[in-house]
Length: 252
Image 1: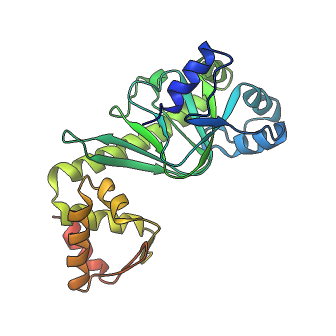
Image 2 (image 1 turned 90 degrees about the vertical axis):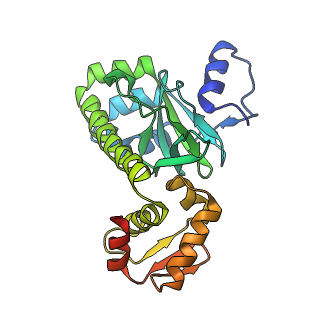
């Protein structure tokens, strides 16, 4: 496995002429306005004035993480905050027997990385690019200076981190107390939230990692749901037919 982006960046800082092509690439310079537009959309940087966004743009490094590339591993998040411009990042931990347990999947305009300034660490997590992703990296020293200048950034960091901790605790609680059918039903209902009836874009392997199971076991459980008339299964598409029954299974 290639080194994580956090490790590559650390090596590049120590070796100015080092080559990052083995694991991540510096994005082409598209001009400061491009970077500033992106930064203004990040949830923890919203409503910051233009001069401060310009300062952040000058103090961030833009990186392209390739699909499957690790952004960071446990213990590597104390030096930087990773601001997600485009793509998708999966945050997970490993169970005792080596299975992935996905805690969250992050979409653009948010950040990933633990919050060491607040004494928070997300259970020793890994972060991996689900697809090619563009990330702005803000060093810890610059983050500290930003927080001293605009304390509301720290409050937003705490707000987002707090929600993620609650979500992670819910995932781990499901893992500890529910069987595979209950975990899978809970996940399908969550992915088809807001009254939706379809789960789109996830493979059986993706679903297995989200519930801390093996792909074969997840496929067997999906097939059982299908036989019972609870769902329809298509290519990367699952349609919920009996939401009420799935809600009952999710309580087990």
